[in-house]
Image (cartoon, rainbow, N blue to C red; front, top):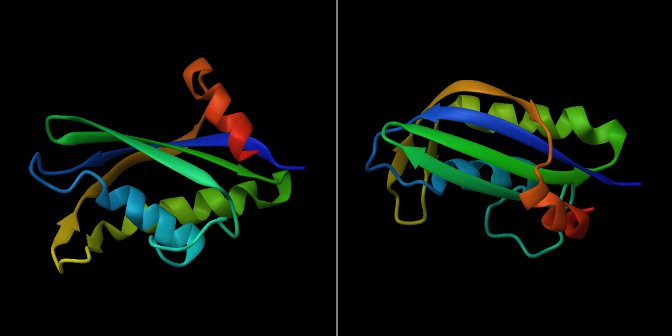
Length: 117
């Protein structure tokens, strides 16, 4: 049975860098491509990015079985450690992973978590 998890990361990014690029990198790492058709094969997920100056807080809410939780977290970290993504217009967005790890589902995320699981 799937359950919902959260993975949080803080990135260093230029204020003018494409805010959606790290989330697209996560989707590519979990699904093979950021433009895939649903459903997500490994873990349905949603990534929210919030920028404050040159820092970006990413919260990736995902649902998977307990046996795959660490695999999903490892893929997220691998995508973010890469620090770059080439977008569909060939623009390359760069970032630096500062911190990363598990977090709790917030009350605001509960409804989405239930839908993903």
